[in-house]
Amino acid sequence: MPSKSSDTRPGASWGLKLAAFGTLFFLHFPMWIIFLYTFTPDETTYTFPLPGFTTKWFGVALQRADLWRSLTLSLQVATVATIAALILGTFAAAAVYRSNFFGRESISFLLLLPIALPGIVTGIALRTAIGGLDIPFSFWTIVIGHATFCVVVVYNNVLARFRRTSATMIEASMDLGANSFQTFRHVVLPNIATALLAGGMLAFALSFDEVIVTTFTAGQQTTLPIWIFSQLSRPRDRPVTNVVATIVILITFLPIFIAQKISAGSSDTEGETK
Amino acid sequence: MMNNPSAPAITFEKVSRYFGEVKAVDQIDLEVIDGEFFSMLGPSGSGKTTCLRMIAGFDRPTSGQIHLYGRDVSSLPPYERDVNTVFQDYALFPHMNVGDNIAYGLMVKNVARQERTKHVDEMLELVQLSGFAGRKPSQLSGGQRQRVALARALINHPKVLLLDEPLGALDLKLRQQMQVELKTIQKRVGITFIFVTHDQEEAITMSDRIAVFNQGKIEQIGSPSDIYERPASSFVAGFVGTSNLVSGEIAKHSTGSEQTFSIRPEKIHIGSLSDTPHSDMISMDGVIRDVVYLGLFTRYLVEIEGGVDLVVVEQNLKSTSMDVLSAKGQKVRLSWHQDHISRVGG
Image (cartoon, rainbow over all chains, first blue to last red; front, side, top):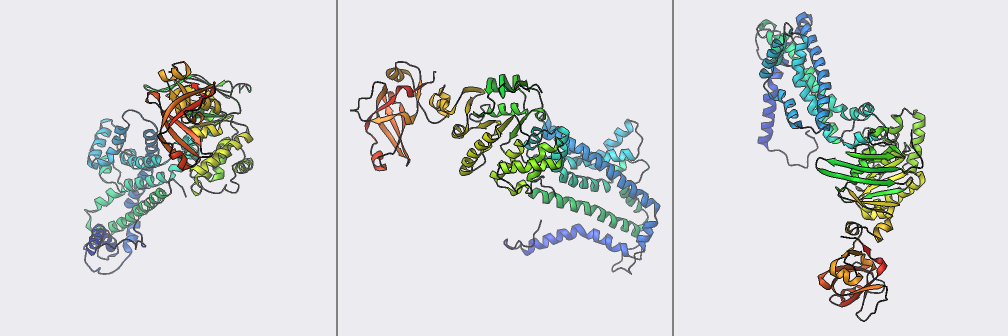
């Protein structure tokens, strides 16, 4: 993280600073556009400067039942997918860390694959599988689709934490009379808690704005990202979409920001919680 | 429980532990007496730590049985054995403060909080850390962590306390201080201690008895003086202290038998060629090849017949560094008492 008091290091050259600000501008400019045109009174065009200032689109957005349905669905899917990912990801990480079975590395690689594969491949594969098994497309098929990449995020975080924790700690706990459950509850869980929190938040954010896999695994349901996508064909609603986009940016920004704070903070203090 | 108080604390009956083709522990028989300070000494990979882990229950024997006060514990999980361990890296729980770390064994047994606090205070006093209960392990020095680990293991009043090279990470001065303290604590609590170390000096200083491990087998079990004065094998003679091994023709020449024997450097006397040693002394002539002045001692390298080098250590009672260093190249007559040799076979 950049610190303000790094005056011992020589300052970056002007070129480098320019490049850094240029990159930041390039990354964040579109978001500021969205944010800005949330407040335009003119719904069809992007004129600059704004012809006026209004917050009426927030009111309009509040009235839209279809928007609320998709938002609720997205939150539900993200919550369930995150919970599933937390459980499965932790088990997978524990298995890979604790045992030394044949093909351990391959399993680790296979777990990471869904996040490396293009979403479209995962999507089409899931659709074929779900269709082939005659499972009706529903809330649960979306959750399954999202869990494929959410598990990876949790798995990675937890495995990294396991590798940093002393293996003898678990032995020490058993040695002192704790059975496996007590050891998990009093020693393992507190040590991976921040990793779970960070992984869980990241998983939630990933699930919340996912489009590609969702397109393939959803039936009649419209998650929020898909709803936004469908809005593109309705130019008159553009400011409403902007309002939603702004809210989504805020909702996703916060957990990722916190997750990053937690991971960064805990890596300095070697598994210390609080 | 079917414990027999008069039985040995620990008994190994033909215990083996194989890791694939590697015989980490190979058919070991062993008895640890109730209340003694027992050391397992050996180089790394000699099987001493594997033995300790099998007593603790982290590892199971491939074959054979382990008894704890007469009760077969070979297949019990660690939490069902009346044995506690002090780990080499201490393995303190970083998310708990010192008090909670020490109370852990009582907490998982559902002992009431008030009772726990009382025992924790006792333990903190025993290891001289009163007032540290609220600190986090990360705020302690290595020596203090060591004491917390000890207190945490002792609070359960185990029948046997296992210590896995617990002093390895400490600096020399602290280590010597902890050696004395561990011994004092052991006398106070009266628990059998099994201490794993690769440091022969540490083992000799602290133990009632020592088992010397080599390649998965025990070479010798005995008191520190037994091990030092009467090494049973050339491995023990070489691993515990410095030793001169003499074999073959030269051995026959001096002792009448070709069997290899060992003689400790400090037992050899350096005299002049005109000396006539006493009849129960063995003597040999040689040339001083090298002299190392060590302040308190001087170490000589003396070449005897057949090109064999013997190490001789003499205290600098009267001689100065000038005297000893000028001895290089001199012809001398070495002599030692015939009782001071130890036949080590092969």
